[in-house]
Length: 197
Image (cartoon, rainbow, N blue to C red; front, side):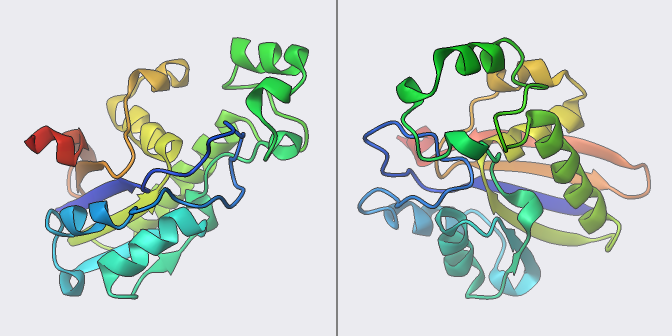
């Protein structure tokens, strides 16, 4: 049995509501307060393989959780919004935003990628790592949409509905995979420190 913990990075500091996608942006102050809580709820670093998006908001967490023993993979990056990156959402041309909002799965922001492309690389990554082992603990520090896309794949529902899945900052989602039956199970979704009061 393979057990996978999908962890979203800590909250970002984005007071101007910028479209960030694959751009680097600082985390909020005191972002490390969530790190200990997460570490207490995953297997020990010695018995776990860690993967991370290369973006610093994810790799900082992976570094802490893994005792600096983790692998970066571009396929775990957030969506590339192309020319929209680092622009305030309300400053992006209205016609472009409207077109994308009407079909965010297929419409490609200028010089960026659409959700289908993110889905393809996310599932390629998942398939690759699952083919390497039959029994393991894995932790992936990544972004909300990458987590949503993995869950959509597991539950077999349409990409148009992925925003029905709430994925909070510093949340943990746990799934298992049985190589013998080639089946997934969602154990829990979006576990946060707030769940414990």
